[in-house]
Image 1 (cartoon, protein in one colour):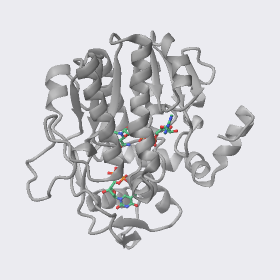
Image 2 (cartoon, rainbow, N blue to C red; image 1 turned 180 degrees about the horizontal axis):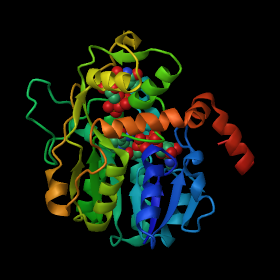
Image 3 (spheres, rainbow, N blue to C red; image 1 turned 90 degrees about the vertical axis):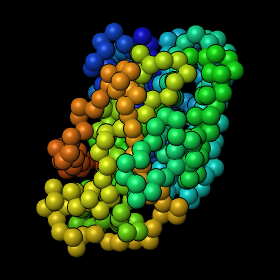
Length: 341
Ligand code: NAD
Ligand code: TYD
């Protein structure tokens, strides 16, 4: 199978490339990525000379480039997105443009190229369901929970979800959607909470904890997410949605204490800061459908071992995140490709 992956230079995308090329020797991947601030080809240097892997610098909103790459592939895994909630609060324009309109362009060109035959997996998020209260810990998102996004990021991802649903219904296209909880692991852009906190602590800086720190997220290792996406690509039912989660809910305060403990730091390193606007209180995923119907369950997310391993990755890879934080990545790209990304 030859997969067109969008957003493969980002956190989850680059881990997906690694997993697929390792576990499916007969597969090929073409990675289409426009290399926004979070796309980083240094995440994939080990594949630069692998003939099962190809990189195309291109935008999911550009029908011309899609028209060139789509005919030669067998399936799409569409991950490219603007992905950070805080940025979407500052400026939602690029989010609607890439996450909603970009998905529409992807679907249109895929249909024009292959009709309704070939599979397209849309990688969405549990954030499309909105926020759960802390008071009823037994309630979790299922695939039939109404979509009720509450940040500009999640609203723009929901636009993609609704289009995928509509294109399956209207044109009979072979489309499947995944909705995953918060990921952690190597190569995550250090604006997200885990790499931000770990790298701050490594530099002796405090960690900015939003509000009262009681907001809850369900944490899943990125390899488990990638394995689930691959499972859905290979065996998911057309037109279905699959929740993906770790059954691993932690408050931000618990997460912060776990990181502090792993890194041998004390509570004085926590700086309580003003809360995020509209901060979703709790996400919790019921992932029984993918488990019962497709046999997937997480194997890499066990806590705190998987968190310790992730912290160690950032400790051991200071050069990677320092370059990302400082912009030295641009120098690498210019040397490699003759222009700045
Ligand atoms: P990321 O920000 O690390 O990577 C996004 C990638 O998309 C980057 O390489 C970027 O250059 C590329 N991109 C952005 N706009 C583009 C465009 N217009 N055209 C082509 N490429 C473009 O994000 P991530 O954390 O790896 O998330 C990947 C996907 O998974 C997203 O769709 C996100 O909504 C979803 N998701 C993420 C999480 C999480 O915890 N990170 C959880 C559930 C779902
Ligand atoms: P984040 O990693 O941005 O993911 P998401 O908003 O998509 O869940 O944030 C995870 C949680 O951590 C979220 O509840 C917000 C909180 N947070 C902080 O307390 N401080 C920070 O500096 C950041 C970036 C996040």
